[in-house]
Length: 153
Image (tube, rainbow, N blue to C red; front, side, top):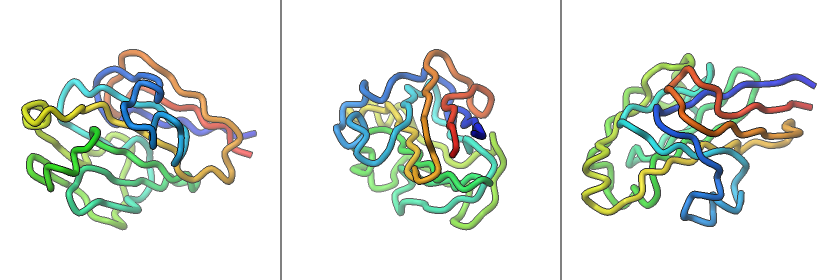
């Protein structure tokens, strides 16, 4: 079995998905992963690949890695309510990215001012070829610290 390493899209603290206050994520309805409590508003690509989806409000995006794993990075919970305010996107759909490339920036204070939880799920949403997802928790640095080890079939 081959392994794939996914790196932190944020600097902060990685926590188990069960700590996300939204059952869609905490109960793995769309996939397994890990969440990050961001320390700042910079979001980077967690792997080499292509931006495969972007939300209109810039609160979430997907990266399809070079080996075909699709990852969803969801910035905060209910941040869609901001309708894009406080979010800046640096990429476009179909763009090639390298691990650590800046993808988004968001206003952490604005989210907190609106009482929005900024805990940010990082989810493996394509699971056909994934035999196991091993999350790593603790302090993380964007683009540098592994947050998921994937066992591919």
